[in-house]
Length: 617
Image (cartoon, rainbow, N blue to C red; front, side):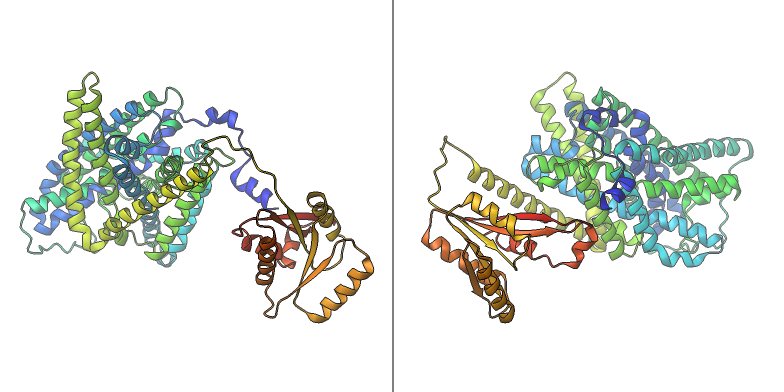
């Protein structure tokens, strides 16, 4: 039953030999890896204006030069990641670059920052998309839907998680249409607006309720401009995704990944600068009274509130929700790299039935869902935590590339080192500004979690090193013979399920088998003694007293007593277990066998084995 449900939801398993068929073309990869970066067009310009308006409407004109500076930084970072793709074609992005060139700790800091940022990406983008959906529902006369924001966000996370469990190729096919619909609608809006403005002049935005514009006493100084620049740098989030997932591309992987990155950056810069320019021309600004987005203001002013406006709004809402898909493509892959290097549990390196890292996908869905519940799907409350992590990764990754270029000195390394060096300085400046301005609003949580995660990574690594050391055969050692093998058959009564268990025990310890019964009910114990004597079994029965009705304590004491007589021997505890014919019938029986196996797992010199007796329907 459970297997059938899994097959229905996830699909049939894919053979490892067909793994190459799950690789992505450039077209599909753009939808999978670029949705996060492209979705930033919906809010990056507004983030700049939100800071500038603190100095009054006269400061909004600075959005254009600030947008141009951000576009330049975006191109610099993109160039650095193109170098990363060619230098590290097996993927890994900031983690691999930082670890190989700056050391383990730097690599783990980059990895921790990215993992946290991926969780935040899912929570923030899904919550923002749900907010857009509920806002649209409110305009249609369904304001009550706003109260179900958490439930809707969790449903969206579940759907995106399920889509990714079905395989990266299938999820790319599912999400390609909304991604390209957003790109076409925004570029179409920009072209139409520029043509209309050229012929008829730019019409100013009309607000249904006038925005409460007022200064907070902040002067239009360098610090405010830097804050606006840092706020707009959310346009860079997600740009690292392609470098993390190079191996998801069809061959030649590095070439296709680099081409996809170039296309993504071209689209991103075009749309970001286009929206920023239109916001300047039409006087769009954040409106706390209506909470209407800048993109919505521009679209309403340029195309009206007809079908075109509806398409733009729906496409924007969908891209915000699907921005989470980039995190689902990269979080599991980064976790698999960490697992491969023994910094995360081994389970994260295992591929599931559909050749995806299922455990990483499920972990991301769980953590992001938990974040949505904690913050009640309020993306505004989560935004201060957002972007700090990714700029830590940007800074370390580019610094790592500078170090590599100075060391390897490939043709053209001077230009590459210069560009990556400038990018390192600029992203470090943005990081400092983000950390300072957002620290008290929640960024401290991320700055605290990153070193904690690094400590956890190191602890996991030390564990695996200890395990490897203890399991290592430094010299060829011939296994010694056991001095004595004792078999203990734990019985709960006399029935058909006990017979194969006794036969198995005799096969491994012919002369040293004991049946053990734990006395939880004196009357039942006496009846068992009598039946055992009548049965005339060759195996002796030992009854263990348990005044506090515990199964584990008397059994463990008996095993210790046996081991005290034969210190070099092994005790095998044999558990007769019957297996019901139907899965739900297991719920009708206690799970004593599981309890005993768990309790004796750490009992030295003890082996626990089950002998099943399968029941018929």
